[in-house]
Image 1: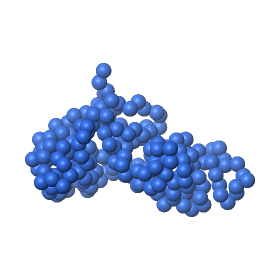
Image 2: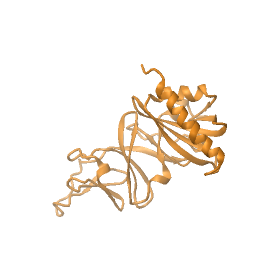
Image 3: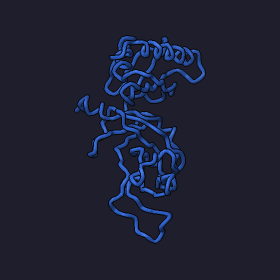
Length: 225
């Protein structure tokens, strides 16, 4: 049985899975205006948290990953992957961390080479359509930053002959077979992740890069309501 379209839309393609290194970097992200801290615990699990430490509201993206915990840059409070529960206060090592202090976490899924985030406060099933968003063996081209609403990006893709297929748009950009994933980042900011069957460094890949830049110019030139 197919997954309802609105269930698929609830999942946002926020970053490439390959951009998150286990126990290492923290990546800033957005989805529907929500600022996110994206990171991967040492055990490999991907995390998407509100980019705000519940202690003093400092951005988590200024902090660091310590094994399976995220540490705030301000006072070093540490929060456990998965639950977001505060587990350590370095200034008071003998004191038990307060159980009511938790980072706000969101549901994540990794499929088709992307990290997807669901902003629902309740756990949501991961639709099978996410796994088919990008054909197996295709190559990542680029992420296009577009200063326009996500709906304008979607309409522009359709006007260029791209067909909506569940969680992605498929067709040709610059004559190259392409899959586009659109992220609604902020009210006037969208990201378009482009994947293609063209090999890296090929003439087709270069043509896609040039056509993508032109597409962004066209979208940003549209009247913004």
